[in-house]
Image (cartoon, rainbow, N blue to C red; front, top):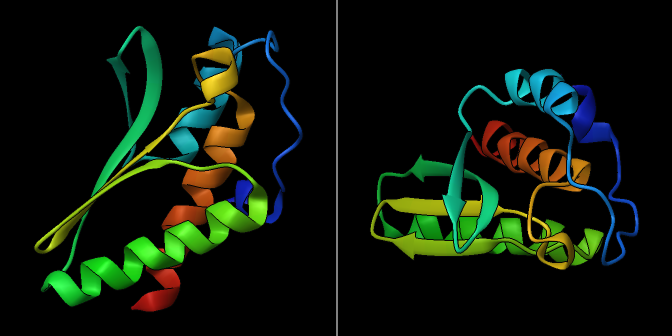
Length: 115
């Protein structure tokens, strides 16, 4: 199990530092299905999940929403027929924080526990 799954998000304030290149080199390999994209002048973690139909995709979206609400850290979610695209980043710092990697790992865990 990815040790990030057992961690909780920490409070993040505006002006907090984004992950360093060294942290990125340590964290990203733990999330092999995720990639970093640059959108609207900030880096984001992105992964597309596939499902057999819309109902399964919607169920997964709702489960991601529940963990986001529990941790107080919220992604961008796009739900389509058979696919959910999840983007994690920290709005306050306009980039990536350790919290985003924690939440990406928790998102992956949801997929593992639903199959």
